[in-house]
Length: 419
Ligand SMILES: Nc1ncnc2c1ncn2[C@@H]1O[C@H](COP(=O)(O)OP(=O)(O)OP(=O)(O)O)[C@@H](O)[C@H]1O
Ligand code: SF4
Ligand SMILES: [Mg+2]
Image 1 (cartoon, rainbow, N blue to C red):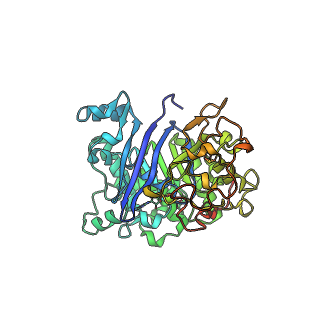
Image 2: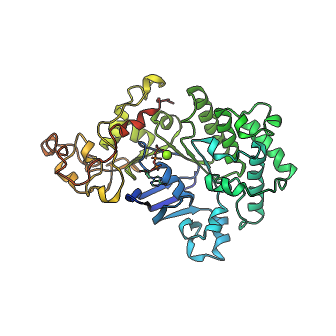
Image 3: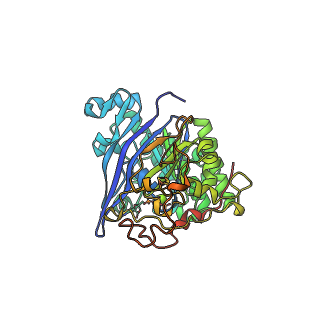
C-alpha cells in the first residue's frame, strides 16, 4: 500500500433541488481511501451512500448537483496529462476531479474508475450482446491508454439517458477481434460457463447472478484502479452473493485494485473491508478500521446497527439478520434538517450538548478512528441525558424525523454474512 491515499475527498456536498425543497443528500463528507484497500460505506437506506458514489464519478444527474468540496485523485501520469490544459486542477501527483471539464472527467470512467451497480439489468444495454458490451469497455480502455483525452464508450456509465441515446447509435462493429477475445477471457475469469457462447447472448438471456458477474467483468475490462461497488450483491440469493463477494476479493488480491464497497449489509463489510465509514443522514458519522468500528464503536448509531446483529461475529445467514433501530431516518430536506446532531431523536444517549451539531472527533489512542459525536472522546454520563420523550412532542427541535415509520428497517433488509 502506498503512503499517500489514492483518493482524498474533502467537504463533499451534493444537493437535489426538488419541488419539495433542497435535499442535502451528501453533507460535508471527508474521506481518504488508501491505494489497494477495501473501504466499506455502510448505512441505512436513504443515508446518501449511492449519491456519494455517483458524486465521486461525476455522475449525479439533474435535479442533483455536487455543490461543494474537492475530490483529489492520485495518479502521476494522469496529473501530467491534465496539467497542460488545466493546471489549476493539479497539485503534484493529485488531480482535483471537480476542477476538470466534464469531457476530461468522463475519460476516467471505466478506465481509472469503474462501478458495479446493484441492478445489473439496468446497467447493460438490452440491445447489445453482453460480449459486445464488455469488448467495448476493453476497447475504450485501449483508446484511453493510447489517447488519454479520448471520450467514453457507449456503454460506460450506462443508465436511462445513455440507453435512450444508444437507440439512435447504429455502429456495432468498431471493436477489434482482440477486444472481443479479451471480453471472453473476462467472462471466463468471473466464472461464466461457456464464455464463447454466452458472449453472444443478450442481457435478458442471463440470470441475475450471471449478469452481476458479467457486470464485474465489464467493470474490470478497463483495468480500473478504483472499483466502486454499490450494493453489488443485494439482489442475489445468499449462495450467489457469497460467490460474487469471493470473486471481488480474489480479483482485489490479484490486482491490488482499490475497492469502495457500499452496502447496508454489515456482514458483507465484516467479510470484505479493511476500513469502514458509517453514513447517517448524508454524513460519515464514524470511521476507522474494521476492528475499531465493529469491536469498539463509539457512535450510538453504529452501536445500534451492530447491536442489532446478534451473530455478526458468528455464522451469519438468517440468524445474523439486522433489526431496525427505533425511530425514523431524517428526510434530508434542508428546511426540515434540525440544527443539532441528526441522530439525537433516535439516540438513547442524547444529552443537552447534542442540541448543537457535533464535530468529528478523534477517539483517543485509536489512530484513524473518529466519530461525529460528543461521546467519541468522553464517556457517557447518565446525569446529562435528556429526559425520555424529549423529542416526542415536536416542540424540542423543529423538523424532527419526517420519513415514514419503518424507514429505519431498511438496513435490516439483508442477512448478515460474516468473514
Ligand atoms: N434524483 C433524486 N431526486 C431527489 N432526491 C434524491 C434523488 N436521488 C437521491 N435522492 C435523495 O438523496 C438521499 C440519498 O439517497 P441515496 O440513494 O444515496 O441513499 P442510499 O444510502 O444509497 O440508500 P439505499 O441503501 O436505499 O440505496 C435520499 O434522501 C434520496 O431521497
Ligand atoms: S452527538 Fe449526542 S445525540 Fe448525537 S449520537 Fe452522539 S450522543 Fe447521540
Ligand atoms: Mg443506494
